[in-house]
Length: 307
Image 1: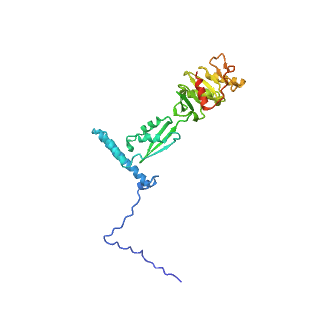
Image 2: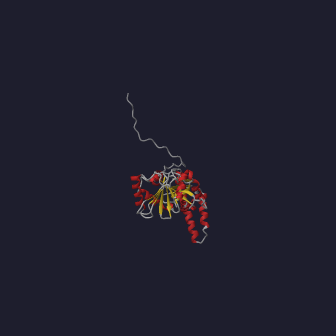
Image 3: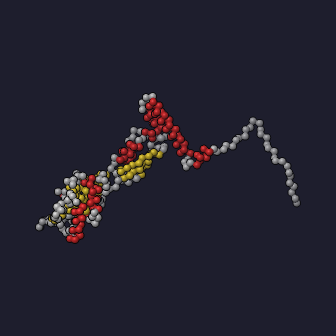
């Protein structure tokens, strides 16, 4: 069988009814395609545009207020209006804070006169946060429309400082962080005396010369704002000179290595005179060497060693 192929012209177009318009096909412009490529949602993009427009209006209003001598209240009122439109601090995201009380962070923000985004001073929030001993630095930024992001850089405890009968954690720069009780002392060096916290780096440099001896030092008293007394866990006190303290400490390490001075029932080693090494022994039938290494005992002995 064969099929018959009919030849003819193209099919006729249907006539357009009178009064009926053919809808035109809308082509995407370059701007539309660029907007679709942005990594943000349409809602977020709309917020950004709204914020930009409101900011321009606020800036223009403040400029006109200044030009014509209108009180600053006009600009504040406009900023409050922007806040009422949704650009107001409602959420606070805090990172980096491990020891700092979160309420201290929130208080630094909520203490502002207004929570409207244009009126929240990031510098003021940062300054308030840095008044807390734990805060070495803080970065504060806005996340529109209603969130502040705060990153805290905390100080690290390096020692315990005893001063005026109180104990406080301090960092490597001697900045007081918070008070601590004698029965909850962390395993950190104990510095005793007025201004001892400001000598934290000097103490670290001193002990760096005798790393093997450092674990045995339970407390260090800063005497007369000029020199150190070191109290060992075995009960002895080493009196170091004002000058050449590092050389004297190295000499003591050498003597202890050769003669085993620590843990032998001796009480005090005085090295203030570079020409002699004075050792104090218990008096006959008198006091025994102190071997109690509890926290409260160490604190009491450190206080007595200041004499």
